[in-house]
Length: 407
Image (cartoon, rainbow, N blue to C red; front, side, top):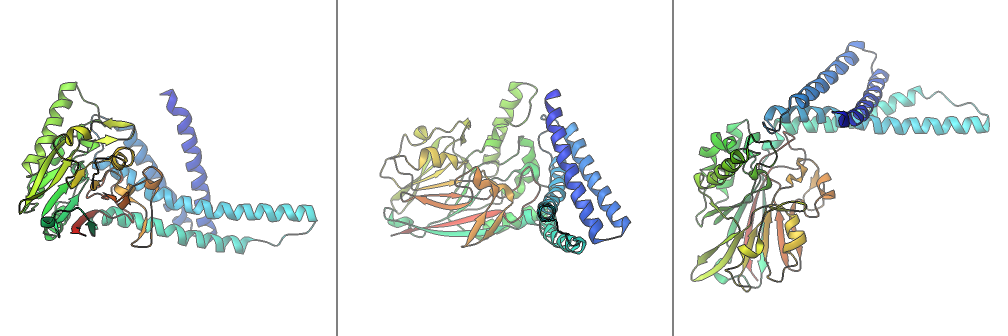
């Protein structure tokens, strides 16, 4: 308990600073005491709700929708206040510099109250952008499914697979879901793509197999005429919660694997399958989770042990760091790797074809979208579901459709 005291003091101090700057800005803009008091009371309620949630949180429960909502509300209120702080602290710096110059030069400074009000109004306008974005992201953004399409050309693609289409989905995280109608809409949108092959690249639950109980009938509707295949993600192993005993964890893991069969997916555990058309074939491989610094269960050599180097290969590996550190430099030549895991952190800025940014890029070199090195590709799917934060801001849930073309 003592180890949390110093971080708690620091966090409390930072929160107080943010509240002081925000309150003073509102005081400068409006003389309505009830408005300022109401905003302060709402903020206090959000902090109390979050700290109570943290204090009552148990790793044996995992991240429930209630926990996620407390986190979402906290971020919705904290990030706009950071904007207030940055703008107004910059104004304070300006004031201090002007005052210092006036002292040195022995001149009088002009009153800056009107300037302070103008700057506060600017800060309010800027802070309203993330506030509105987070509110939208929690209410609707997490269901704002986007179909992202790519056409990839390969010299050594078998002729029979020219025009072959793949739909990739990833990171369902069924334990976070609360709205069956919206999830049904997403599943229907997946089926509307009518791809030849459907691939799911891991994290079907947050922690426990029973999270999927109410969703098996929905995801069991997914269709693909050439088959549906899947792999595990890091959350599927049950490593992020406490278990009464090791056997319970082992039993849960087995049930998680059985979910894939229940919804019609062939789960690949360091295995491969050959897909055949008109006497030609390509190799589909799926490995268990391999992450940088944690849970490196995936065995690429085992998955590849019964295929040939000259085979055209599609690899499913949940964590894109596997491609960065192991796959892309492998002489066995994995033509296309499909991953997920990052969610694009569920928040960022994307202007298709021009610009994309997310804090996720400071952790993962490949964090969202298509990347190519040495003529080998990886697609990092932004995820179908959501986790930790109960929404999406700028980084929308993704359904990827890839068409393979013969050069």
